Image (cartoon, rainbow, N blue to C red):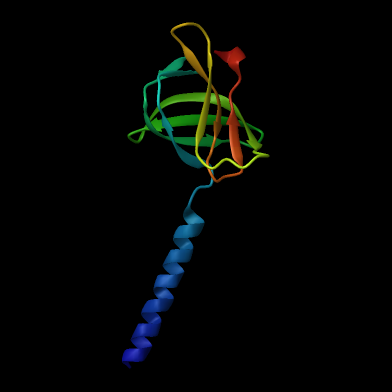
Length: 121
């Protein structure tokens, strides 16, 4: 009887773990931004952001969430990264002496890269 309870418990836990893995949304990652950067019409402050995107690749709408609140949205292009990136990489470009604009986010150990168009800024 004790053996049967143990087996039922293990089967339940395995099922819950599988459901949790399937429930994970593949359209989000976390990234750390070190400096103030411009995304669309919003300037992001340094912090740890959750980056989510919606839409059909390659054209997606990207949301930047800080402390669970959306602080910026911008159109982006989702592409497959051809090189191996070990760490997250936030690529910026200098717009002028005071402003850096987000150009690209490479997600470490992933095959995805988000590219942002400078013309919309």
